[in-house]
Every structure is written in C-alpha cells, then in structure tokens.
Length: 113
Image 1: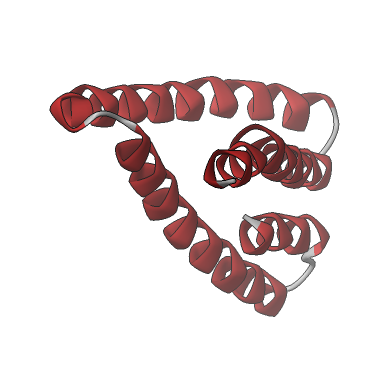
Image 2: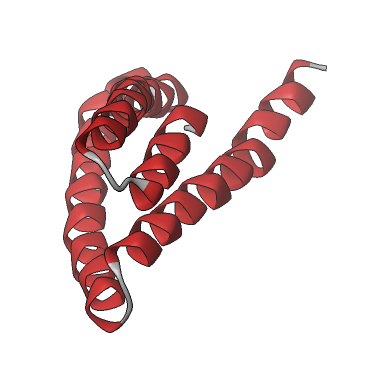
C-alpha cells in the first residue's frame, strides 16, 4: 500500500513524461501486490464453505469503490486540479493502510497470544 500511495503522490507531482513513468512503476507494483494480498486476506478470514460468497462480496465492493471513487475524484479534479486529486488519492491510501493495521493486523496479533 505504501508503494501505491507513493506512486499516486509522485503522479501528483509529475510534470514530465519520465516522472509519469516512474510513478506508474510504483503504482503498478503497489496495486498488483495490494489487490492479490487483500483478496487472499479476505479468503483466509472467511470460512471454507463461504469462500465463494466472500470472493463475490470482495469483487462487488471493489467495483463499487471504483465507481464511487471515480465520481468523487472527478469532482475533486473539476473543482481544483489533477494534482490535488492524486494527492487526495494518496492520502486515502495512507488512511487505508492505518485502518488496516488498526483493525486487522493488531487483532491478528492478539488472537495468536
């Protein structure tokens, strides 16, 4: 998630094609790792007889997030700039990382003890 946020931040600061390419490398690595890790986490946490439902729900919410996120980010870009829009997306990624740690990672550590 850090790579994805870094890629979005770099994209917000990009003024040349080279910077866009560098940002795309970070975003691609982050997004590729993030998507499969989130899906694996969802499937690991679900009971074995409910993995199909969990996978379907994951993709439903993923698509919903894409739709709503595109709309909201379009509003941000239309009232300000693309730079602020990508900075906002990077901020959302960082907040998501913090929420993941607080809600999932710490809970798993307590369950092991």
